[in-house]
Image 1 (tube, rainbow, N blue to C red):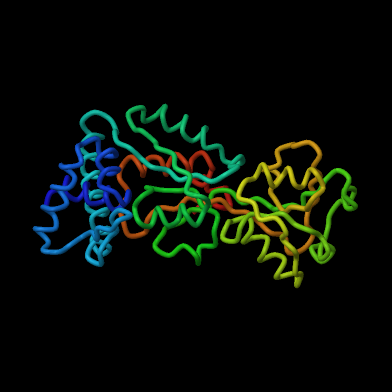
Image 2 (cartoon, rainbow, N blue to C red; image 1 turned 45 degrees about the vertical axis):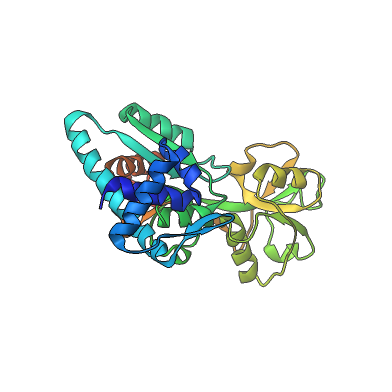
Length: 303
């Protein structure tokens, strides 16, 4: 079984298209088709079902995909180990990011990493939030990713907490609560809220806190963009629950601490639990932890 055949198979599985897979691999489509045919012949199994809308994995293909990814990752790790000894670390790492990450600066991480490992390319991907990032790390499309989800919802991943922030009530400068030093969630029963969609880290933390306080709240606006969330708050159309780092001094918005049942937003980095990280990905993980201070024994989030 050749690695190039497995690579072609994974590319077609990811792209659901032989044409797009060929473009991704920078080879002609006939070479991709031949590689998949050879693999199917060797395994005596059909790996893809051809349809009018493209191709999709067969049952055998679905079984092969995680094993193929693991094999390719192991081969890359072996290559990186040799390169590290013979001339410095090289390779490519795919990192999943989240919206509005300001407490932990991704550019700071990348700049620090590049200064130490100039021959490693870091590719940034945004998968639509924590659930997408977690799924893509799990199935191998990302090497590692930032997430904000309870660990019970992250099977198959190893998670390192990085930053923990309290979530505050955000209201317009004209809001009735704008002068309050703090607020209890029970005082917000009649508020109209804007929040992120269910499954996002901020929304999950908020829902859990309101449930713990015995408060049913109305989320009229579900938005997947932090800028729009703040705009709705600023115009007095809704109240929000968000971290101070995401507001970052935005004018026209007042932040009020929560007294009890305080929701917290925790940013973590996730890696696959059952798959060894390549040398380049492991180096990036170390840089992320160092930048966040989680390798400092004095940090309460340190492992």
